[in-house]
Amino acid sequence: MAVKESPSASIVAEEQDIAKVVLMPGDPLRAKFVAEHYLEDPVCFNTVRNMLGYTGTYKGKKISVMGHGMGVPSVGIYSYELYQFFGVESIIRIGSAGGIGEDVKVRDVVIAMGASTNSHFADQYRFPGQLCATADYGLLRDAVSAAEKLGVRADVGQVFTADQFYNANTEAAETYRKFGILAVEMEAAGLYWTARYLGKKALAILTISDHIFTGEALNAQERQDSFHEMMEIALETAWKSID
Figure 1 (cartoon, rainbow, N blue to C red):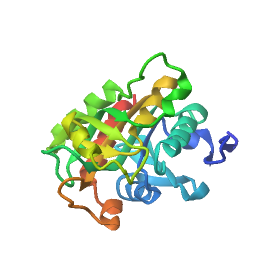
Figure 2: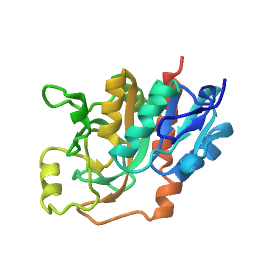
Figure 3: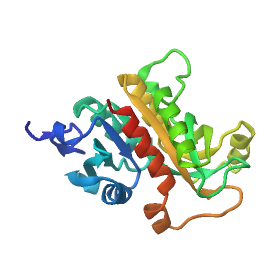
Figure 4: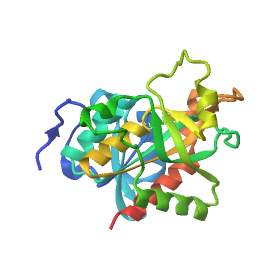
């Protein structure tokens, strides 16, 4: 196959070089970390804009990992192009999130069943109502099962996908907590909507990197190189999804 360049010039690769299931952190250096520490014989398939992508094998099955950047517009571009132009069937976001729930602590794992949001990304679909941003049930089920087998406590529920990192509404966090939101992040809703629109599969597995109410937080290096439990749950879920 010939090398293909995506319409946004964000991905340049041969379709055969990318697996049917892709793990996607926001940080491309986290993608590099996953490839080097968990995949056998990883090969870099994308370096455009330093958004690194790798493909290797995990327990004998082909899996890719690639960064998606920050925010709904960025994950919207990368997920759409992987799904639509490179034959990807499933994307599992592995990212960080700010804790909201009372029982959620720093380093805890959250599996996002759905993502409430203030993003207007889905307006493009002209859906006659409010389009719910939800995970693929099969991936969700397998992630919960993988967490149980690994002995990892994982909270399953709603997250909030925010269009802004710095929120001028100082009462927002209290409202999110009141409605049972476990954590705040910036991409899951965009990924879920894109997958739903294209008839593909998506899931977000998150690690709490800081807590909105307690102020506890991990530093940049810890966010890049840790989160092992989330990565292992995602890898096991990806492995299960491949026939």
